[in-house]
Length: 166
Image (cartoon, rainbow, N blue to C red):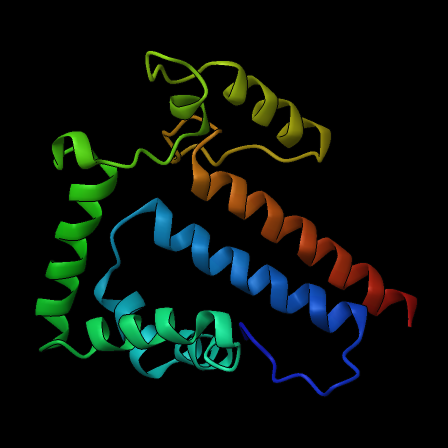
């Protein structure tokens, strides 16, 4: 379960679990183009519940509306293809000077070099929290999705600690 509807007096554990779900969702969005399965979850599954929960926040309302429009813009296969093409154009460099590389180190030096100080800092943070990248991950650790997933895992640890303290 990704997201729980919260009463006004939510516990620390509930807030942490919801925060973890949100970080994980964003991590997935920045890591790779959506799969058909992921798209269907956004349209009518667990991820749709998360999206609807976000719509309750005024700051997210227009973003959720834009996402809902994109998710309903044709058959699922077409939407996956359109979103996949946009992902590649924006993050993988096929958009020319309008790209937005998802690596912190790209933005922290004049030449846009990867695997710089930001990567070393993220490697240290992963080690400090007894985590490591899965063998299948071939991205520098300062990738935005990896940073978000670290935050998701830390929030999950807080939710578990809060649950065990009750």
